[in-house]
Length: 515
Image 1 (cartoon, rainbow, N blue to C red):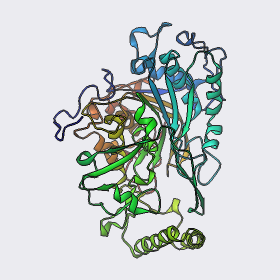
Image 2: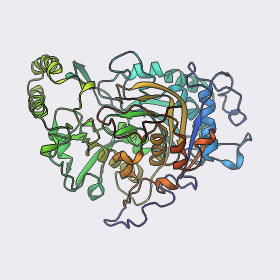
Image 3: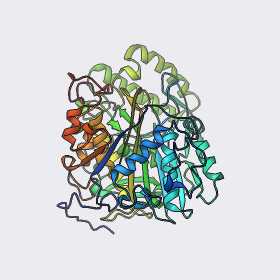
Image 4: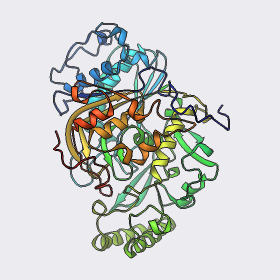
């Protein structure tokens, strides 16, 4: 168990990302086409290393996504000694037979908030299919595979599984002899029914079949001593709950039991912007592995003038909105049958007077949100350093690996208002923080301007990166992307549109043209 004092001089120890020497290496692969194939996303060729799994019985020669994920594994250097042979077992460096593997996509919502598009919002089944296939290869028929996430509380999980094609992939794996079963899990314990952005009903869901684990980070929390204490807003109108779990040396999170019992976590997030933290990739994505959603501080209530980060300004409009909205939220908790209906009418009027949500900075959706990134890093440290009983250790308790789906990425007002940006890229690596840095720079943003990433790389008793960002090594099938982070900056592949609230804050340059 971790002692009360930890030497911060070892802020970048080797082995933080699972013990492999290539933890500082990140692969960036450009696929042949920036589009997804049809489910169930069969591989484009009968790869020799998968011949014993039965997963190459059917082929899709046009599946460029599968080939890109496979190439990313090779470029990272996984099982380098056997590359090019039938013995190649890339994820065997991470996964051992008999282990429990959690594959964590970003399934935040089944839809864009304004239109019918969705491919830029959530991780696609075409990227999950090769990850699942190579996990099966590594387990050799002995072990457990969980495919799980906790979407937004008002999202349709069945629609997500249908749209992404993952339901077909799971059926394919179930029918193949000798493979491990893939358990598909919705980790949420409650579903919100919303009308006009107002919660009108709460429905109970089964939740995580393996329960949950409480992890208290105490003084190791990024929220310990933070000025927002006592004024946090979580995932529901009941602000008392989130503030009970974050005060003084009580900085606790209710983490998914599935995640805490896993030996290996493979994050498969979407390449996408986020209005509250700048980018939502591997670090932000694992927030979905929480069972106590209202234990998570998303912002500090109030305007900058009062020490809050709910709004970017402290004008009378923001002060008025903060008071009125809070009054309706409290009324909705006290009078759940009638108050939400009145709140809906007030919301409609408020849009006319104060602006619609996707056109106005509110709810902590700006670069001055100093609360949410702290919670994000706390979750990552809890997942990495706590055991299944919630006890913290001074070494990682599980291996983690990241594969980012950037085939169709999301730019602008992410996560659920993001616009599609076909990029045709896959990123992969053993360190979530470094992969996130590479992805952020790939889209034209300065990662040093993203507080979440800047803090993730700083010295800490429970470090999240094995080396500083300028030491990481980029490997790619695009020569101009390979080498150092500075070389990637010079190549400047894309310039994504920033989220509202981050405009003129993230982009490195506005003079170069996107690729």
